[in-house]
Length: 253
Image 1: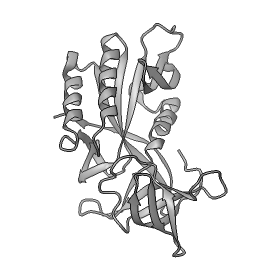
Image 2 (image 1 turned 30 degrees about the vertical axis):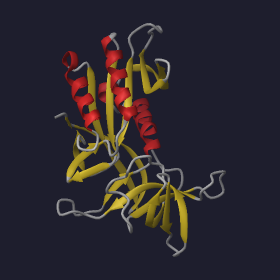
Image 3 (image 1 turned 120 degrees about the vertical axis):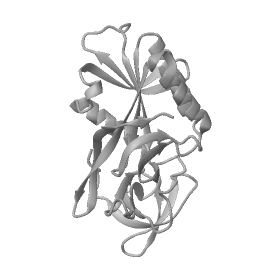
Image 4 (image 1 turned 180 degrees about the vertical axis):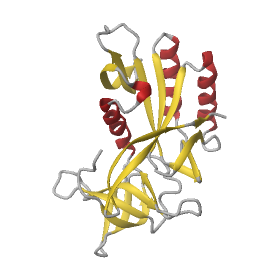
């Protein structure tokens, strides 16, 4: 997935009120930009962090720029800067693009892809995959995507970065669908290029961690739990796009 406009570098002054950030632009001027991430962004929002911004000027959006990617300093293990896609709203679009192209082998071969599918009376899951020629009553594959940005240890991604009652509800819904004969999958999308495995941040949300362990153990693990990293495309050291990368293991402890 290519970014719709060339990204503009900036330096972060502060992130506040969840969806706002003040930055310094290349010409030295300051701007308030949209931060499309409802989480805590732990480890991603320190002052002076390099922010890559999409340009919303000339559109109907209220703020002139949107924060898309955080560029973090290199570590002793990784000698090049690390890129993190902080726009959680892109996670489903990245997965949808990969599904349409057949780039997720465990989910290949379905005939129809539906998005934002109503489950129960008050909730939705991200995707419903329907086999070619199946009727409405045939078993489907339901997929819920979780955007992962947190990493507190080199090579390890963690979810969530804040307590998530909504995420816990999705676990229950996936388990219920699996129990009725549907295929159900929780897909962690790690919007980073520096992680090789994923685990639950049990210290941040012990209830979600317990729910994840319970779902993984129930009925031999009927709910599939998978994780994929992301790859960034670059031009002249500027991020130009983000796409689904390879599958990485999930530690459920």
